[in-house]
Structure formats: C-alpha cells, structure tokens
Image (cartoon, rainbow, N blue to C red; front, side, top):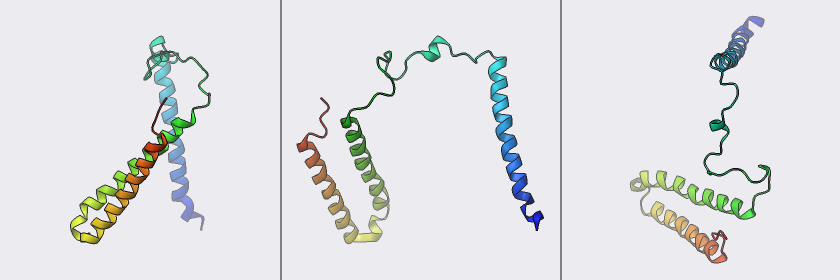
Length: 122
C-alpha cells in the first residue's frame, strides 16, 4: 500500500530540491558578482520620476478606487465582445440584439457615471 505513495514522495522531494537549488544559486550569484547591496541607481525613484514625499502606507483617495473599478467594468465589456464577434454568424439576429441590449445598458451606466462626475479627477 505504501508503494502507491512513492511517486508523490519523489515529486515532493524533487520540488523541494529545485526550490533549494534555485535559492542557493541566486544567493551564490549575488555574492560572487557583489550585487547583494542595491546601488543608488536601483534605489532611485522609478515610474513616477520623483522622490517619495510621504509614507508608502498612506490611504488613497476613494476616487482612485472608483476609477479603478470603473476601468475594470468597462474592460470586461471587451471580454464579452470578442467571443460574441467570433460566433456572430452562428447566433444570428437574437445574439446581435442581445449584445446591443448589453452594450446599451453599459452606455446608459457610463452616461450616468459621467453625469454624476465619477470620472472627474480634481
């Protein structure tokens, strides 16, 4: 009965060995090339171009989250459009009308958000 679990044991041992070897190789290469300490270039600000002026754990404005959620919602619209476009000739008029209703609902939601000022960043 225990011989049935031997492949699982071998798999776990190989997985642990790969992890340990990867970590050891990373540490060894870092030590040999003397790149263990970050340089001033690596520690410099990136992407935004200026030094951090507050704690990184500060609270974000709610508008940031609102814009992010709105982006996700309207980005998911595209995820529904691609498969629909691929099978449009198979689903016919019913599929076309259903997608137009879906897009119409999204447009109404977008106009509502626009009128409410949800897209304003002041």
